[in-house]
Structures are given as C-alpha cells and as structure tokens.
Image 1 (cartoon, rainbow, N blue to C red):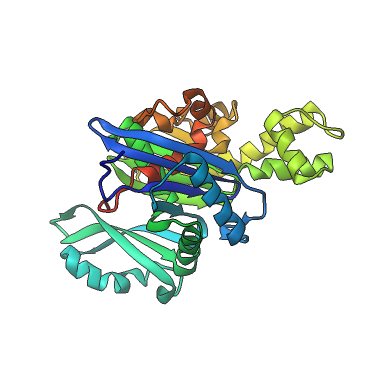
Image 2: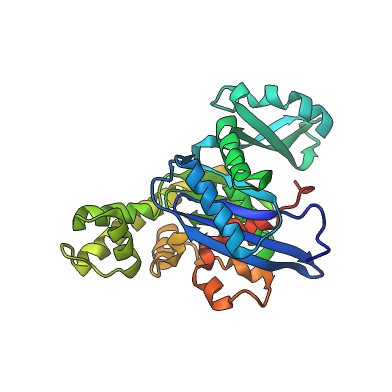
Length: 351
C-alpha cells in the first residue's frame, strides 16, 4: 500500500439508492481489492440522474470514505442515462491528432444536444478499412451540466474527480477482468434502482449500448400502492417478500412478475436491434448485475425471453481480496458492486 503508483484511483459509484466505494491495487497477477464499502441513501436524494440533495450526498460519501479508511483522494466516477450519447461512427482515415481537431464537426450530426453543451471524447476502434479509407470511432458525448454536477459533489466530499467514466464501460471493465474478452458477443445487463444499463461486447469492443429508465424501484412503488404504505415500508416488503396488511403473497409475486416482464421486454428489444444491426453475430450469453440480479427467479425468466443462457455476474471473481474484507459479506451483495469495481481498476493514464 505504501508503493501505490501515482495513477492509482478509487472507484465511486453514486447510485440513486446506494453509494459504493472500492479501492484496488495492482499486484503481480492482476488486482487486489483492498477496501470496499457501501451505504444506502434515502429515495429523493438523487432522482432521474440529478442530485437533488448535494450536501447530504457529499456527507454520505465522506462518511463512507472514513468508515472504509480509504486515504486516496483521486477518484473515478461514472454517469449514464439520457445525459450521455455513445455511438459508433465512421470517419475518413486520419491520425488521432487530426481527429481531435475535427471530432466536434463530425459529432454535430450525431448528437441531439447543442454541441457547446457537451463534453466529447472518442476512441478509434480497430484498423481502417483499406477499401473505403474510413475508420470506426466510438464517440462519447456527455452533458456538461451532469459532469460538472458530479465533479462538484466529489469535490464537496473532499475527493478529487480524475476520471468521469460511463456506467456501461465500467461494467465492461469488470467483466473483462473477471472472465476476459469473448470472441462471441456477451450482453452485460446491470439493473439498478432507477435504471437498467445494457452493453453488448465482443472481442473487447462495445457493439451496442443502451440505458432504459427501468429498475428495482418499480417494484417498491407498486408495493407501496397496493399496501397503501410508505416507501420505506414497501422497500422492506420488497426485500423480505413477506406481505404487510393489505396484500397477499400472490399480490407481491404478481408485482414482481409484472415488473420483470417490463425489464425482459426492453432487454429483448435491445437484443433484437443488435441482431438486426449485426446479423452475423451470435449472442453467447447474458450476464446480469445490480440489485435486479439478486431476484432469484429473474435469470431463468430472462433466459426464456431472449433464448440465451443468463447468469449472474460475480464481479469479485477477477480480484484477489485482502484478508481484512469479510468474503461472505462481499458475496451477499456482489452483483450490486459491478460498476463500482469496474471503476476501481481505472487508472489515470488508461483510455
């Protein structure tokens, strides 16, 4: 720990219902997870990707840092949802330096926001096509307002935001660390409280990326309506799956089934679009993470819907784990930690 490289970063995942933090160091055979922690936050602090209670969120981050005894200040965070646009585009062959000068002009035809309101980044994919003298580029645009909001929260919490990543890329990072890149396509699906992130990857390249505003909080809201109870009480019922005063076991099961059917429909739509775009590709598997992955019957339901094997991603699998961390505690909620762990292996000098 005393010999950490200067490019070392802490991964911080600020979700709408929980905040997670992880610190991993590079060792001889990969990465060792040194510290990890998470804390639930009340509903309403973060809504629709916007931080409504910045001071309270910053305080929660500060306390989490103290509780986990993390001393590193340099941090990697991520964003998602409608505030970002990720597109694979083709541009005339040119050097990276030249593309840096022209990317804004290229991006204007693909970005539905005012170009002055976004931050742009790109990555050249593969080699140029000699028959067309064009090359594939992954274009990323993020609303400045959203990036600046999350950076200000990190600063308020006493940390330094060095990397602002995309949720789907963080998911891809932890998948590749745990299982390596696949020659056949894999769908990575993270179901959080408010948002589901999907990233279909093949040979280390993202082929399709999509965020949809569906998540586990749909279940809580429906339970609260049926039970006529508070959000907090409904959340407890959701976790225990034991009904309260007004609902039966069948009512709760029906709510779960309805919400999971919504998730499956949106995921299937995205996968159908993937097949229409890449008709020669084959989806080998889907790996799910986030709170939705903790619903026991969901992998089987999704597998039947998309006709593809579905498994729960085990993001800690790619890490050596320091003995100070209690492995059973990590395993219990491990699918929820995927994005955070993907951020923890980012470094200042990587792409």
